[in-house]
Image (tube, rainbow, N blue to C red; front, side, top):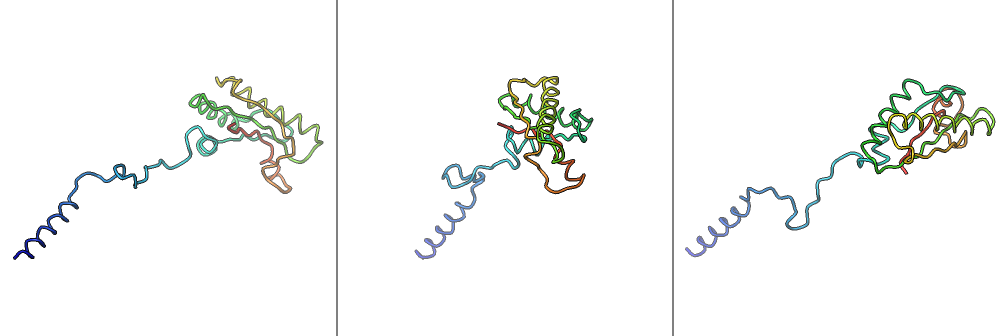
Length: 159
């Protein structure tokens, strides 16, 4: 009889432990992991690249902004307004044709064009720096228009 009573009490205790209506978040014991949002950290370089776009492209030997470039820069201006603590650098780049001097000057004009557009859209110029890499930092390698067109850009990066 006592064995049946002990067995019944043990089963009741086990069932009572399983009947907890509260969600187990692990907070009480420290063994659970906090739920992390997926995707890049807001205001980070990864956020800029994934949700806005970090680069604009230019035509051969040009530093004027295309309508596609302006659309990307509009999104960058909104992103910069959303994250006022973020400083960025805009790097102007060229394809590998032309002299070093010409490409450095053209890369600087491209970086300045993006910078000036962002300032005109309300971004603080003090949060942005510009640099030209000319043809020294290609994003695509090889020859041909499809490669060269990828290297004619201005890239915005979080500092």
